Length: 266
Length: 281
Image 1: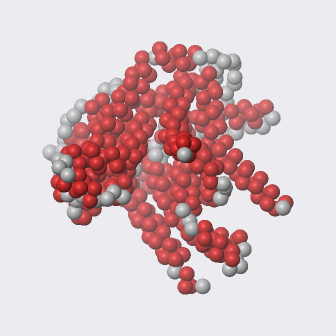
Image 2 (image 1 turned 60 degrees about the vertical axis):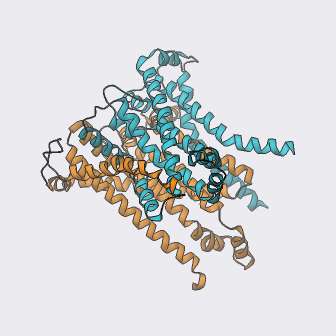
Image 3 (image 1 turned 30 degrees about the vertical axis):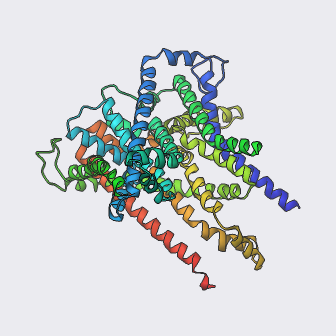
């Protein structure tokens, strides 16, 4: 039995070690956002001064605004375009389907920096001034392929006759789409939208190359400010970490809780 | 059902404009001379000739080296972790995998920035070492810091990928191996490991690809002088303004990445075939 106990201990320390490695840096970042001094290493007492400084900083507030605006708009547009395209792909001939899927994979397989400079060259060739619009368009472009990729498998599991049946019963194609197909693939659409949102919210590389004229999202701001130690970045980062963690917990725990509730009702 | 087939048409236009044309523009810029006007371009190989300067070749080799070390470290740490998680009670598996994947969703700049205050000369580690009269250790602006930052950022992808292949493995095969008299080590080496290889391979691409092209991690943890291929591209576009040379470097990098992905995929196929062609025993 000694051997098995040792194995259990080894397992425990492996898991504990890797979780410590993942979370200790984030925890220290969050703890020192509440420090009463500029130092990020020695504790001088609790204070929320960096949060006050954060909310008083106009550049930071504008970056938060830009990030949220771009994330919400690009999520909405890429989810609509991606879902409709995925439905179209599933009903297309094989040759068209493969062509679209292959081209669609390009931005996913390519390093972000290559996609970024491609778009930068495109915007400059068309003499479009870099700013909020170019950032938004770029975010829609890089999110849509992921939405398509998330929605497609759901369509594959769909009975092909079901939309046909709806139309035989008098539904127009638009009604069949809106009332039959889309509700059935909703879980895929929602996970596609969540993916699009988090990717846009966290994006740095593409935004950095395609925006300009003082338009900055949170990531660009962190990039330009982090050359010096600055606890305001810690405060901003703490807020970001909390938001993302809460969203992830809700997304992951809701299905489990729902299942439990159903089981309890039975 | 052809009605719905029409839904792809707008995206085909979109895709050509925003995915295909940008790629062609990179190729066009890479093969033309300086001057940012598309209309007045002149064909040249100079941008590629310029890259074969020892300075740039060194940057490329360094990037590949750092990315390979990162990938190796991620396999060595990630495999045992994924293996342990795949073998604990199922309720714990969901929770542990959630804990492993949460960091993936946190902004990469934030995750990398977090290490600066830990590794710097007056950072947390050195403050601790000083209290027990060791150090200070120089960690920031070294290869160590850059590789650590990359492992930190990309390890979750490796764990996730290996875990997925281990979790969907048919447990009956493993039990059969034990029933036929194989011990734990033999079962692992001959059954579990080969069958989980697709997970390792896809983990390798998930780690190597961002590791070879990132410019944030080397900039934050390697300092302004630390040059990897991503930094070189960033410099050409943002600081120097040599878009043609920058495009040529990007093209070279994209080709290297595609080749390495093609090769890993081929290795993957060979291994799976070997694992499935059990008649060798």
